[in-house]
Length: 220
Image (cartoon, rainbow, N blue to C red; front, side, top):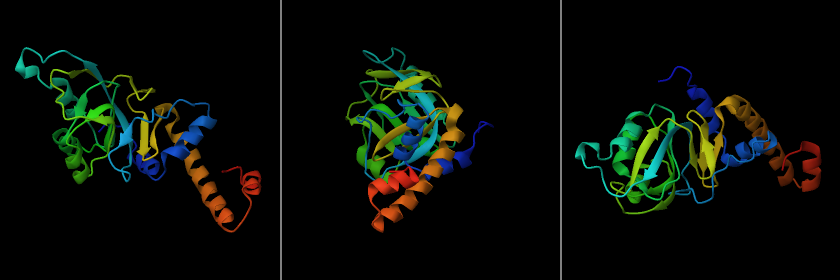
């Protein structure tokens, strides 16, 4: 495991939710950190939080001539995963993910995948509970259609620029990316905001007008 990784920070992130993290990022001037709404989980209960392990995909026309190179990039991407990782796959029109890759990823300690691409084996992925956020579902094989040409590089996924080591949090609302340089600050501010929201929720339940609640606590 990379020495700079703080899995406690990921645990704290996992206790939050994308909407509150996105609010904090907005207020810090980072207003383009929420992925496009097409990136959806396979179930409404699915959540994830972790470090971005980035994968860059390209579209190809036919498989490599040498069968030893089949799936080479995809397999290397999975083998490079570390505990706490979320695989983040660049925008690509093809089916990237499936049950066997998820099984291997889970064994390596990965927390899930976010791909601006498609998956298959969806029922198996749901049954095994591997957090999967994708742009769509397709039965097609990746071989000869898409390929991985780089791992651990900046990518664009769901219109968001993602760098290796950025924080990723996702639930049924969508996916939010926190730049690594602001990670601790954003998580701490989001925790404060959740605390404030909990107080306001109690006040609203007791009948406090929304306008008064916002004026008093600055949260809504």
